[in-house]
Length: 370
Image (cartoon, rainbow, N blue to C red; front, top):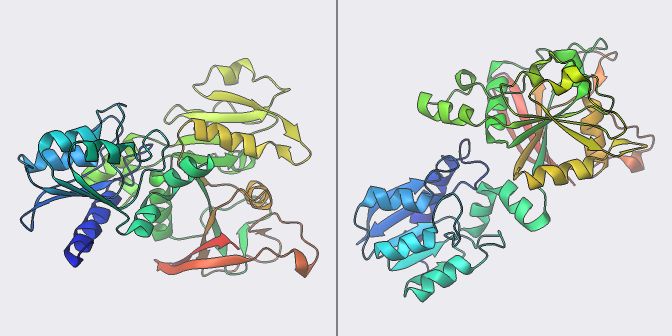
């Protein structure tokens, strides 16, 4: 049975896990605390891909972990990837007890790590603060269980629900604090999805900029080191060859109508081209998300105009909406938050608001489709 002390140590491990939320992708960010005789002797969290996992970081910090209990937010891995199995490392170090928050939903691991530990004579417990642990890595859990990462739409609007003027002008609706918050959303994401309309209107770069994250210098540098994949939905290939999203500062995937071939100028850029089938509603969004899953994209952030965001919502492909509401009015000629051609009250889309908080002078509303 878990004790109050166990709960406090797991809570500490969850706090450590969050330190890797900007830099561990595509790996799940995990935290580990090593305790012996009631004292913490080592801590760690997942390092950038190819680096140490949380358990190895904690073992290195401890030096001598014989007889210790390891509190880990996710089942220790049992397979060889870019690093060796953490289950083996814990056993070799002489750890005698492992308390895990949750079993790894990855079928490659899925209980095998626990079996390895038990075979080595280590006492194993699982389930302490499990719900909290799942909330730390929701995109990874979603991809492992459902085949797709978590898809969130970032939207900015005025109090009267407008996102851009009729001309397409949209910079800047929100203030600097909200823009810093968006930079952190980008840093947490494996992919940023937009439409060609946004590219043409804003010539956006869709990159993580270390100086705009508002984080300590070392943490900000790590967050910006591995840029998210930029994904552009561009059925007719209207993206200019000199657009910022094709500048090579971050990897870019352009999804287009399979019947159209990129021009030599476009092919000369560093972008990758993904042909998709086109239906009455546009490019196949479901297939696009499947492609992102194969690329280990746990968190997908949609930063687009009302058309793509509306299409994603109507197709049931949005898991969460993050709406920044600015204390301003843009008028009835401005564009709506989402392109949703609804005519009757019975068609309205219910939302469950999970969080509302002030971000500078703006408000951030987090909601999920109800």
